[in-house]
Image 1 (cartoon, rainbow, N blue to C red):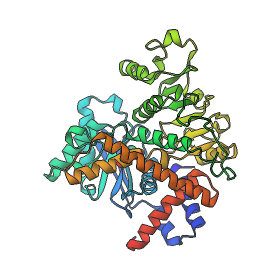
Image 2 (cartoon, helix red, strand yellow):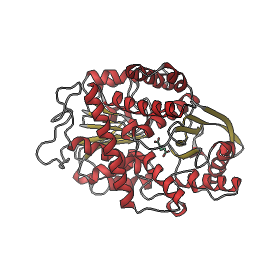
Image 3 (cartoon, protein in one colour):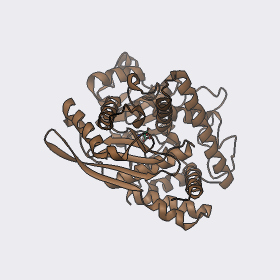
Image 4 (tube, protein in one colour):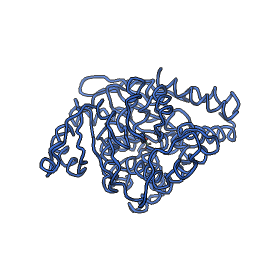
Length: 436
Ligand code: GLU
């Protein structure tokens, strides 16, 4: 089933469960606006989109993706998830998403800049600090946000840092934004484990105890982790968990992966990837060759089926389907990608007792620090990194606790609970405003 359709089905189920009036569903079935256009770079034209799903709770917010697989159905689903994420985190933003169907690695820097500026020329009338605030997503970064902010400021003849987030810190970016998605995911996972949710608390519910921390609740050295994806999100969560003592035994990117039972030194892997461009060539870095004889080169499929405690998909959607859901060995899946598990796989994994911490909670750290960046821009301020991280921690832990409360109240799984929390908040805003 298509991504968008299956997301709307889940929203429909949630509305029915909550007994919320059908009019809301009709309005949540379709994005409020879809912009479809072409952007040129290097003599070629590429298809681009901006989908504005819902702004009942605040201006539209969501990243821009440059990837050959980008299509309208994907953009629509990603836009819904942004609205849900903002609502789960209880931050005053709506949901949108944009992208261009392009392989940015085939473009020169100049072409990439003209593509980025072209994207803004196509949508500038529909974005703005109180309208729609884009941000980075797959294959876009702070430099691209800088060009986009510059283009918007030029066209509108107004310096407008608050129109886009994920900018470099020198021009209104927030400290902590670059690693925010990964760090936020680590906060959620660690808080979940430390509180022994579903083990000491609510043991008799639908969710089985996935991992029980014994003794010192901050000793994670026995917990093994596999991470799919080593872009911004995958590499940041890898660093955050490595610093906390987790044993990261498998990592992959688009070109393949590496495994070592002894666990990788993530900083050595990052240094190596800077030189080689891929983790698949980095099994033998630093002193790992001598110290870790047991390494292996693996495929992405192997990575997902790794014998680990925690699996972290941090790449693209639809990675775990009915084909491989039965082979997953991890006890917890922390969804750092958007939509990595499709609905059929979700059912299989639930039956098998695998605990899934859903994307709209786990990977919301990016939009949260984007929200902080937007606030700093509107106030002409810049906060210290420590302040950003402590606010991020507070919000992530607070929303995890909110989701767990709903799990307990309705004896349901974490994904359903996160949907309930988000849909309740969005529909309440729609009803209060009345104009939807
Ligand atoms: N692209 C990120 C996401 O999918 C962040 C979006 C934002 O900061 O607005 O959550």
